[in-house]
Length: 630
Image (cartoon, rainbow, N blue to C red; front, side, top):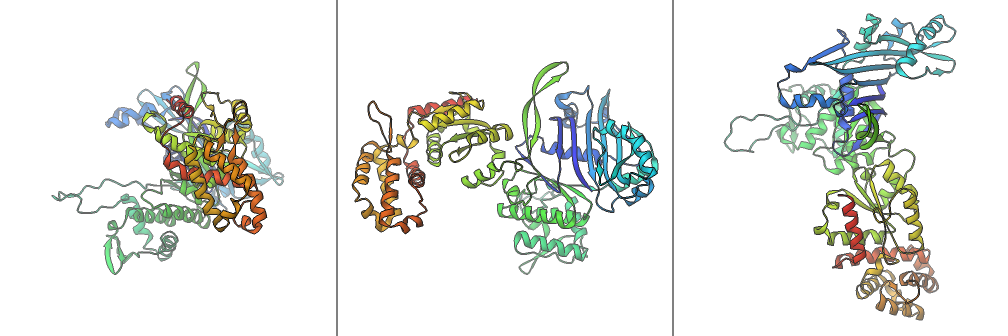
């Protein structure tokens, strides 16, 4: 069994949301964005199903815990209790999984799909969970009497309840069989079989530790207690009793850790012990990461195929290397055991390792316009997007910045600058102003170079897809002015989100003595024994003499600012080709432009630690960005 789609209305921070699921689905985003609410919807639907009734009532007057009382109204979107919570799920069944249903429903092939719809309503002091509709679907031939009768009677009900059209498959019809309609069981025998088929298929893996009460010991912190729940410990105990499952667990652990501390006497599981370097140690004496990995893997291996696992933050207590390996092992287990994993994570490392990222889902809160209790308004609501479908821009950016894919899902602010030298120097200026900044340090911000890419696409991806606040700082040259126009066309406002520095390049602010020192160090490192020969060129010597006076850029009265580093880079390429063409290939320089990019970045890296003051116009830009975030 696999969940294909879930639809949620009016639940917690979710107004109206449809989520698609794959074999391995990963929900990733900031805290309180609604990830766990999506998991809870699945639990609310499945963990309350039973054969006795389609309705469950909770008398809220019987709730004594104040924290639970406080939660009641907040179950509804902005406490909007006049409208019921509606939850629905589409299921796909594995081959052979629904044989009993096929027989009793008279289908010629296995049951393929199911639709379940649940509502939650508030009525005086009652919270009512109600199973509204259950429909199953299977293929029969169009020519059969069953198909004709079923299509005629059920098509209307099917489209009315689900809003979906009946599908076709190579001449066959996907025929619905209504089990529950508007809360009424239509066929008790089929209903019981259906509930027996899907009950206990949803497994919530609790990775959070229980609070264990220790006996009254005068020396605090002396003894260890388990870092996982008693439920996970029992799962481990049951798993290691079975030799095949135990071997699978050990194989997975080797993939993650490289070695295995074996369980001792798995047939005697009152107390879990492991062998460690010839010693017998209790399970709770091993690291918390080891305990969590064992518990998660044992849960999946013990249940096996046809199950769906809901796992929150499997990366808890794990080293980043273990997180990446765990992600790969979980993905392999899902494929090998034919199970579905729905995972909530706060780890970009986890999603970076997945081979199939199509169902990595970004979860965030956005402002939405709705008609709320009779008047139009804007409210924050949980929204989702699929960052690894379509454009691969974020992945290539992550590689260039040396961060893992998914990093941007945790960013609040993106400051776009032209190149890497701008990124490095701007960060240095922000660090110098840190005591004057009230808002920017509170945000997860990232400075991103946009040269060599479509600025329009970058703004769209970060602003519209990721929901990140975007700023642009452009150079004061022809290219910079073009980029300012693009940003303004994309809805960014000049002097609020779009800024232009006074110089053609940020390196133009560096003192000439600091700039020439860094440039000379870098040329000596790169050119090695070719240094003296190259710098004998008269034009190169002339440009360097100007750099000693003016720095990277030269201001001439009545003329445009002259970019001296750009001029030097072009001449360096010409001279080096004449001196030693093979040598220039080894440096990876294929043009004057490539030399300029390299020199800019490396000079910025050398200079940033020597910065002592911020130019007035850049200071004003940074303070404006800080104010805009307030």
